[in-house]
Amino acid sequence: MKLWKTILAAAVLSLAAGASAFAARTDLVIGIPLEPPHLDPTAGAAAAIDEVLYANVFEGLTRIGPTGEVLPDLAESWTISDDGKVYTFKLQTGVKFHDGTDLDAGDVKFSLDRARAENSVNAQKGLFAAIDTIDVVDPATVKVTLKNPQGSFLYNMGWGDAVIVAPESAETNKEKPIGTGPFKFQSWAKGSSITLVKSDNYWGTPASLDKAEFRIVPDAAAYVPALLSGDIQAFPFFDADSLAQVKDDPRFKVVIGSTEGETILSINNKKPPFDKLQVRQAISYALDRKAIIDGASAGLGQPIGSHMSPASKDYVDLTGRYQHDVAKAKELLKEAGLENGFKATLKLPPPAYARLGGEIIASQLRDVGIDLEIIPVEWAQWLDQVFTKKNYDLTIVSHTEPNDIDIYSRKDYYFNYDNPAFDKVIADLGVTSDEAKRKELLGQAQKILADDAVVGFLYELPKVGVWDAKLEGLWENAPIQANDLTKVKWSE
Image 1 (cartoon, rainbow, N blue to C red):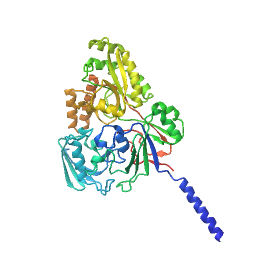
Image 2 (cartoon, one colour):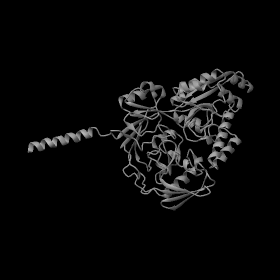
Image 3 (cartoon, one colour):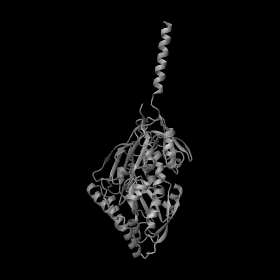
Image 4 (spheres, rainbow, N blue to C red):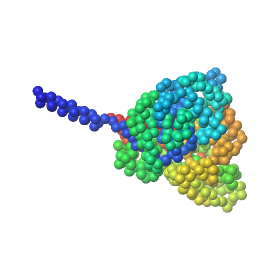
């Protein structure tokens, strides 16, 4: 009898050990190319901030889903007045910040007032420009009154720049972010990685992962070795040139999706000779988009002729506006009094699309007489010199913010573009909620930008993702700049 009990106990232990050995893992290491300058989505323009923190650590009243849809988040529901100007948000119950304090309507009012304040450092302050007043109705209800109807208001509240923060921790979020999301911040090893862990008191559906490390891998050549060794299990934004090494490997899943990343040759419109329309148009004619797409995105990018994603329902195909034409480009330079060409600089940030694309574009512009000096810069230098101080001639960057055509109307924006006709279209768009009218206005805006050759429109950045075949829940597309881990899990 004792022998039978001993055998039975051993069998049970063996089964338990086997079950444990095959249980789904709960940790994940994700490779990202750029380190965020800090960890506060409400105080910086760098996409890398949201790529780590959006939906994971910080949440807004609404959130943007994997196909670009607006979903409830900290606001469980809302009502809109008949005139389209008053939004009354009912907040989720039982929401706590990661420091244990409760979220209430006062935190919402604080966050939105802070974002739109005169001294705000929010990189997307324009998102809040339509707000007139914010009133706390009760601890679970907040009323936002707009100056005028705004069709994009709920969408705007889903941006990373509109996440809700607490007054007690707002000033320290850059180094120690405290949000309400399913993950909380654990550590940041500067230059190496940022680690998040599961929040034990999350108000919503708990995360499946217990731990997620965002490993900073600036060298694209290191992506494949990191995957093959198992050190990193996912690259949501993979190097397209390295795809051939993993695309047929059954251990990995290769997913090619769309982004909101308009990849452009940015031009300083107020700096001579770029202040001349003929010069900017000459640059557009000199660009061979197909060669740029083939060389900088492994042929995966979709050509664009203005600042709108081809995936958008409001996209207008203007790629035929400037067909590659070297003779036409030279003719326009001659009209501008520059028949002998000129010299300029091209500042290139670290991403491969910029560095590879820059070499190709420099060669193409050289063919029409524009001699470019290529200046590689680190991301922090780009943000300081180009984006903030506007100290540049030309640069290449992907604008990954969604629905951001209005940036060309911002007077202090780094393009230095100024066109009252364009500004009026954007102003009209801001007070229009009718979808048909909005589509018409967005079409007008795209055509003005193309005609003015404000920048060299290149292509829509593809989202090339490669991750372990057993990993589920990562986004295939990138409607916003995010690596949302809320539904990510390992299959058993």
